[in-house]
Each structure stands twice: as structure tokens, then as C-alpha cells.
Length: 387
Ligand code: MN
Image 1 (tube, rainbow, N blue to C red):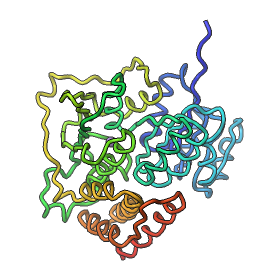
Image 2 (cartoon, rainbow, N blue to C red):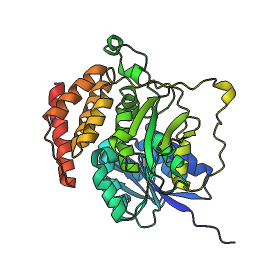
Image 3 (cartoon, rainbow, N blue to C red):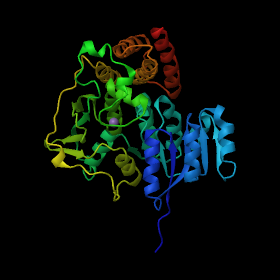
Image 4 (cartoon, rainbow, N blue to C red):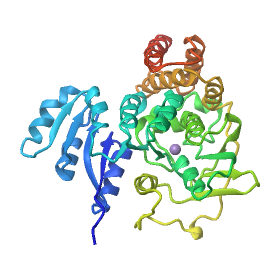
């Protein structure tokens, strides 16, 4: 019997949390998957290790200061080595690639994702900022090029799994669960004094620094409602956020007959990564199983939009549309970086975002170039607000 050719996978952002877990999935299923390309922004040492282990066709480092080191370290292997952001965007279009996993952080995901869609690749989308910034453009492109976008974000993977087999049955409501993050029970007064070190300790999920801060401030959930709007074609009033601190129900879909489907499992990103790679099939895994004997209750709460104002900003940006979510994302990237450097406090992040939303120029029907300009200008405005 002929065996199917291995799926060729490009991992953009291979040294981050999602990237390394994706490589674990590939290593565990090396008869099905092969790494075609790896890209990283700065972590050249880990990229070298990964390249030596997985032997991709090509590797790219975003920060070209590391190019020589990377080139030298791989000189005994037949691996093509590139550097620079433009190369990362070009890697995504390479002909043999079947699946592009977009696992880089923030706005930098936009250009490579656009290229990959135009090259008709399957997108395993982990970089939610791409859809936050330019969801309308991305969805139009994906439709035009017949490129599938498979969600890797655990909530969206859950919804996607709930929708499998539902055909055209209309969605009444999407219910996105949120852990509530490390500050769920903190008072407003306590939130004034929390540090970046405290914010980096997420109760359930082990993730990169930027998304962990976004989880603590609920901006991550704000981005996820925008991501859900574009992935599943629902309107803002059809998306509800429910705080579920146990993080076992990963999200739910309510249908028009009132039935609710949920997807459950241990909080482990390897499952949604793997599902995006194998959809519609499922693979046997040795991942830890959820044990009902060890968890006696699931609890649910309404998110507190007074303590966590970012969620309200995200609903506002989603309803306003145009470049407003792009403004929201750029302002957030700047304030998160400042908070991580202890230049501003936790609550100040939201105060500054609010001002940036008001000060940046609104464009109702942005082009790609408008998004690029919006991102650049909002960063300048936000940085001025921090000074
Ligand atoms: Mn998520």
C-alpha cells in the first residue's frame, strides 16, 4: 500500500511557546509530518537546536544581527539560511509547504499570513493579532484563494470542534470561556499595585510573556472575541464571554434550538495545534486525560468590565470596525511592552489604550497600506502618551 506523503509544515515563530509545542507534536508523529521551514525573531540559539534536530529545508531569523551565527552553526547541514522580516514573509509562500503555522507574536504576523493565503496554504492560525488587525482583509483573501484558516487558539479550536458535523446549522451564540487570569479576584485597589512578575504567573496556561500579560488584563479575551467574529462570521452581540476559572471547558456553541455544545479537555495547547494539523481527523495521543474525580466542580462568572476595561474596548473596537481593532492592537502592544519594563502600572495600560483609541485617526474602510500606517501612527501616539 502506498503511504500518504508527509505534510510539509512551516512554523513561523518556532522558538515561542506554540512553536516549540508544535515541534513536539511533529516529533511524536514523524510519519505524518515534516518540518519544511522554521522561523524565529530573536532566539537564535534555540532555532539552531531545532534546525539541527528537525533538519528543515530552510530557516529564517528575523533579526539579521544573528544571521552569521545561524549560518555558521548550520554550515555542515544542507539547510538554507535567511534573515530579515521580508524573508519570513517569503518563506510562507514556498511551493512544497502544505500548512503554515502562524505562531509569531503580534502585528508581525500580518504580512506572512497574507502571503501564505495568497499562495493557497492551509493556515494553522495561532497569531490572533492577524485577525484582530485586519480580519476583514484576511477573510476576503482566504475566500478568494480558497485557503482554509484552522484555528489554533484553544477557544476557537473548541468552537471549531463543536461545529464539526453541523453543516449549515445557524449559530445563535458563541460562548467563549476565560480563565479570568491571575488577577481575577483582585480588587481595583490591589490592581493598582500588581507587578509584571505577578502578571506573568498564569494559573492554568503556560504561555509566552505578551499573551500572559494580555490574559491578565483580559485583552487576550478581547482579541479573541474579534478573532471569533471573523473566523465564524457572527455579529458582536452573538459573542458572550464567561469566566470559567478551571479552564476545562474551552468554549461553547449555542444553536438556534437552544442546544449548547462544549469542548472539554486539559489545558494543553498541543491538542488544538495537532487538531489544526490533522483536521478533520483525530490522532491517538498520550496527552494527560481530564479526570472528573479530581475536579468536583465547574464554576462560571460574568467578566468584570469595570476592573478589566480592555474587554469593553474590544467590544467597542469590534462594533466600530474599520481600523479601530488595528489601533487597539498597536496601542496594546506598546503598553504591554512598557508594563513588562515596569514603566507603567497595570491599570495605566487600559487608561493609555483608551486615550490612544480616541486620538488615532479612524478609517472606516482601510486598505492594507492603511493598516500599516495605522499600526505605525498608533505606536507613535501611544509611546507619546507613556512619556
Ligand atoms: Mn485562547
